[in-house]
Every structure is written in C-alpha cells, then in structure tokens.
Length: 226
Ligand code: G5P
Ligand code: MG
Image (tube, rainbow, N blue to C red; front, side, top):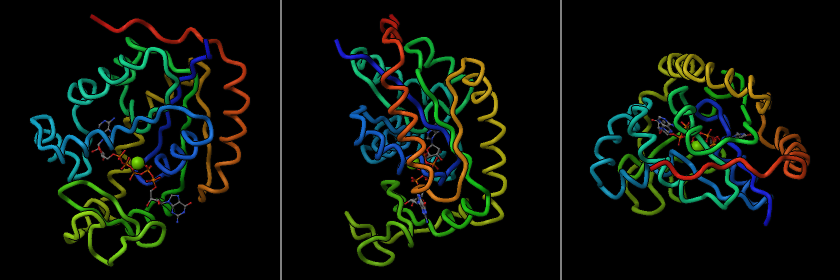
C-alpha cells in the first residue's frame, strides 16, 4: 500500500495558502481540501449551513469552531486511505484538537508574510459577494474589469480589506494561530517560511516535501469517530 501523507498549510489572509496548495497538490498528487472553498460551496448552495456561515465570511470573521468542524470532519473521515493537504483548517486550537480525533498530521506549513505585502495584496482584492469568488487586480484579475467571470455580476471590495480593518484582522489571525502553531511545533512537524513572493518561497516548500514524503511513517490515520 502506498504511504499516506497528511499536511496542512496555515497563514494569514492573502499569504498564498491557496496558490501554494495548488502547486503542492499538482506536484505531489495530494487530495486538496480548502476550508474557504467548502464554505463558499455551502454559501452558493444556499444550504442551512451556508446561510449560517455567510455573515461571518462576508465580514472576514472566523466561522464558529463547531460549524467548521461539522463541515470538515466528515470529509476527512472519508479519506482514511488517501493523502491530503488541508488549506485553512485548522485555524484555531479547538479545530486542531477536533482534527486530532480523526487524524494525525505529518507536516504543517506556516507562511510568514510581512504585513505590508499582505496589505498590498488584500487591498487589491475584489470579491463576488454571492459566491465568495475572489479576484486580485494584479495577480488574477477578472476577465471584465469589475465583473464576476461566471455570473457577470458586479464585484465589491470588502470594508475588511481596507488598510485600517486589515491591521485588526491580521492581529486577530496571529492571536488565534499562535497556540495552533505552538502545538504543531511541540509535535515537531511545523515548518515556517518567510518572504514576500510566493515564487521564491515555493522551491523551499517543494524541496521539503520531496524529503518528507519519502521519509515519514504511514500510520497516521485513525478510524472514523462513531
Ligand atoms: P479562506 O478562503 O481560507 P483567507 O482570507 O484565509 O481565505 P485567502 O484570501 O484565500 O485567505 P490565501 O489562500 O492565503 O488567501 O492566499 P492566495 O489566495 O493564494 O493569495 C492571495 C492573493 O494574492 C491572490 O489573489 C493571489 O493570486 C495573490 N498572490 C499570491 N502570491 C502572490 C505573490 O507572490 N505576489 C503577488 N503580487 N500576489 C500574489 O477563508 C475565507 C473565509 O472563510 C472563513 C473565514 O471567514 C475566512 O475569512 N474560514 C474559516 N473560519 C473559521 N475557521 C476556519 N478554519 C476557516 N476557514 C475559512
Ligand atoms: Mg485561500
């Protein structure tokens, strides 16, 4: 049986989690699970969970832990025989503990991106409010300026992505992420990367994964919880 490998990527809003995750999934064949993507799916499907989370996501606030774990854990329980990469989950200590009841991680990547860089990226960010689709006017602009690629509806900029609100959001991220980072550090599986450009960080992550995926032990997953 092929070895299983479970990883997570952490980082503040706009740090490049999604961009790097896609590269990892492509290069290493890991199943990619993004908490933000599942939330946007729920919002677009207008499910009960979707209505609950919409208010939080639209304001850039963290969705409550019990809602998040109810969304993520069933999906992870189905992946007992698959290697995967988690993007954006766990984000809090409570989520990390819930994840631990289902699965042990082999590796956690933490992205440290300077505030000025995040500010530049996020203040250039426009979203389609109904679906949560995100655009960046420099890096991945919409096909028609100011319009969503799929629906053609107008894009908006969140008040939360304006510089003064960003300071508070990023500070909040740090406060919440610190105990999670400390936890994974104490497990010896945390690897932090600093920089201002995804393309310059990527070769280090690529090389780390090349090493780790050939040396870890394959017994990381527990049976699904009853
Ligand atoms: P998400 O969807 O996880 P965020 O806010 O954490 O959203 P986001 O925007 O998805 O973060 P990212 O994935 O870290 O950012 O970064 P990215 O998308 O790859 O890059 C950001 C932008 O910069 C992109 O436009 C990209 O093209 C560009 N970029 C990347 N690299 C470079 C570079 O080198 N140079 C330049 N110039 N640009 C670059 O979560 C959304 C919401 O869902 C909820 C929260 O409300 C959250 O706000 N949520 C949760 N709530 C509670 N618990 C959880 N576990 C939750 N997960 C999600
Ligand atoms: Mg993302």
